[in-house]
Length: 456
Image 1: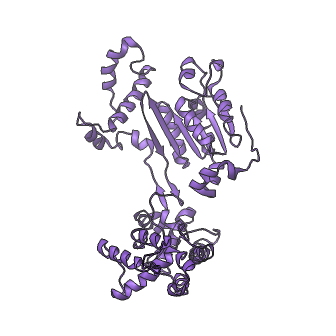
Image 2: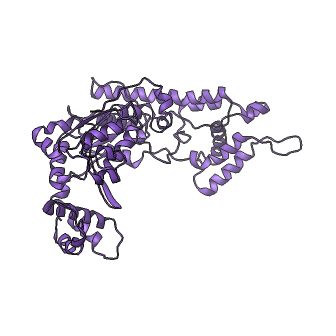
Image 3: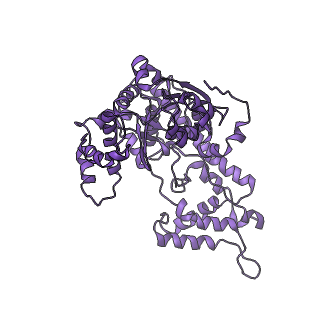
């Protein structure tokens, strides 16, 4: 067994780039993860490598095979010197060298035997990754994990094609880190703190330096008030109106003695931000679907904290939020002096803290024992639900008609064809204990044999 311990190094420096991606919470989840790999194939060890490097807590390899020549030829983590040794042991030792923060262990046994002798062994992991398992064993493992809500990632590689299949009853996400999200600035739903702060600043009375270093968010607010006064309280909505609004902002740029506009980057930023900042504050469709989910509507003593949080946020939306989610509490970077940028930042943080306090109280009302929560990620809530492998592999519940419709067209390049082929290959292996075309003289005879397998 290869084992590595925590080295006490500065993790903030070591994991700096990934911390920027998923933050402290994501890194903490990663470092507490216990990952099990079933079969140390080339695919499996590459997946583990990409989890060990960013710092998973521990990993265990379950594999009863010995290292063979074909393993050395396609697996970077198995060497010629290890021929005949335990594949689980050798892979664990070499993978463990990648990061001393990840603890490695191995079980030199076939998964089929382990499922018979100690099936609960797999229940202790955060994630189980299965590579190149036969269908019978895969279904046994999937059933065991599905019952205990342990995610199973099924990976199958065959030459240049392959697939990944996640099987988990329910996986809830609070910080989903979606791409291309708008900033939550609430210029269409101005809260008291924002109004009070922006109204306290007078652009006309500022000197040149202060005028050119006023946050563009304040500039948008100021000229939005002017626009509303001229348009019956309505904000610019369409392209034409927003173009006119941009021209209104440009008129606010100060001119020198010769009447030439000064260079004021903050006003340029304000103009560029019109389209992305003057957007309606609404509830994302993925969050709306959570509000309508039976798990949210019908809370009980067994409800997960995630669903209690969703219910509390829904109550906030219907009450204090007046149809909007809690304020996120962050603002983008912008040209501004440090003092006023920090002041504006604090305005949003204060409002977010107020909203968090309200949601927290609602959570406590729903479940007294639940601790403090954060709701700045309310717009990014997600829930992932999958079909079980048992449903997928059972002809009575498999989506046979849908699959057949995808492969009916022989000229189609639909990737479902590869799924069907790989399933047929698994059936072939179960019957003949080898892959089709493994022997050169059997390539042609294996083609009709492969076509005979039906599983839909």
